[in-house]
Length: 397
Image (cartoon, rainbow, N blue to C red; front, side):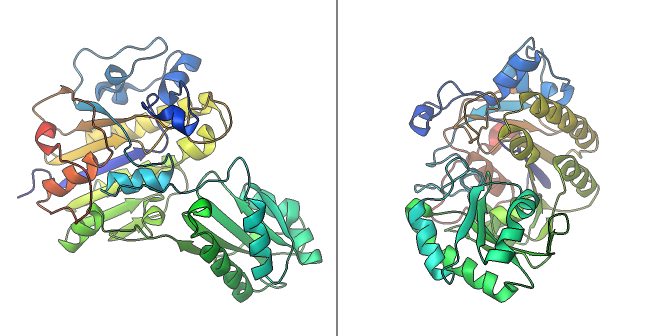
């Protein structure tokens, strides 16, 4: 018999709370996403996160912890070799990543990779090669691609290689063939990206370009079974909101909701909370990272946290006695730090259930995998062979 009938794991994408002991090996010194946002803003209107112990865990600006937080709270570190979205989420569900996924946000792709890709793409000249918005890069370069027979290749803040192709002049089949070649090339450890994405579009001139629904993702599946697979195999619901389905390439998911924004993702989560299900609702809220962290905008990040807090309040109000909410993050992205990349940080784990008897701080954990292990134990499911993490379910009751 499960302790909790429904578990909500909500990932505030990139909400780090200070450098890990090994952060400097990743080029990150003195990083602190949440702390530096508070330093910039002084105070945030986040009463629900405060109630759960967020400021007890990490005070900052002019804000202090509350006297009697209603939940359990702790800091968790990442044991895997990385600081990206896929590594963080895969580790949460039990996988230890030793070879990091590569991101090319700041550097673009190396010449050796692009030269090889050009050869395999009928000798087309590669243009773009930077982190960009998909719509903006079409306005900038699609006319050149169409007129000169070039090939737009670009990336984003995530571990991705994206290729654009005009459906009329290049054709979808040709674009897919180019992406298959790119997927093969990017299996090399030094070029390994989480996803290659085909980005077909229509239109002939700037202002008319439209991306079509023929997008195709060539994603890496998790290299082993995760807590999600174990839950699904045991007949439990595994509901994903936001990017979770993409991050796991659909493995272990029983129902998926795509979100238009983080606000929309919490609206979806609050609707799901009205439904009767038994299992896990796993939520990723990406705007903290994509809109504010990478763009080094601490004020925007802080305001996004305030919006989230309102929606969190709605969720807390409708929880049943046998529901558990876990609020966490997958890495840091200090919006006051140099560059535009993620930062290697400890992250919060805030836990609350209306039936929880104990409150207060728990000792730090060395891996995000305490989350998947605890969810699995809650539902009486064995974690798959080769996974990491110990359950802290007893401390969350």
